Image (cartoon, rainbow, N blue to C red; front, side, top):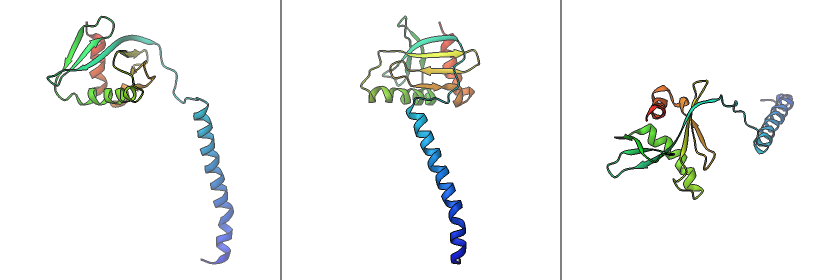
Length: 144
């Protein structure tokens, strides 16, 4: 490569570098300002307060968070249920919070299904994990 072509590319490299640094600074500034790119939630059509408890037989008891009675027992591995709850309870443990405050499961007018942790503010958009996984939670809204 000759000496002349190295200097010819310098303005392009400088321009790209300035663009990347500017983009990075913009992202950091937006994050620190509390800006969220999330679209506003559609109105809630149905919601339920739920607590989840591991049982000695390896199942997970789904407890109505208002009335306190068991509404469902999930047997077996229950991979998606356990994984999604693990993500939320990890944040509770990090903050030194226990399981007393129930999670809030909400169905939205636009078909979205969210599991929100009012104790930490964390939430999962359940339909993002596919219809089969979201159905695990959707059934809980219909149980007595």
